[in-house]
Length: 157
Image (cartoon, rainbow, N blue to C red; front, side):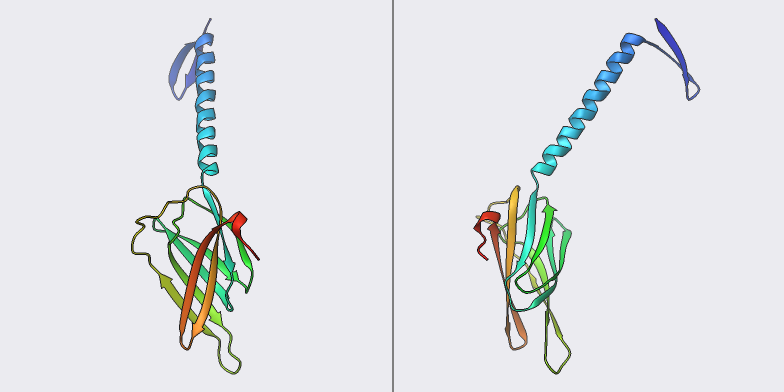
């Protein structure tokens, strides 16, 4: 049996058997695309921030492949929720902004940037749950920021 339809000014002639094949192939194509996206999401890494320092972290920006991932308003001894990232190195490019409370003056805002030289000998992490522990120490007008990357099961509160 042939069927004739008008589609955009064109006449389409097709058999019902051909239509079934087209529908099955379309379904298989959409299924493959959906599975591919699911695998990509499962292989991503999730990272959160734990503030182990004495100061309030106003903003922490992690830069991976030119994209900035922002974590904001992390109190002392608090964590920020997990964010999905494509991957992470044990040492990454980051920028930390800390607010130091002062008794009789305005609060001080100090920003410290960290830029790794290279990733030689490091393993790129692409899946799992990780926490970046940040410790901040103030030395007069300078701020020392230490970052430590740990897996979810290794954290001791």
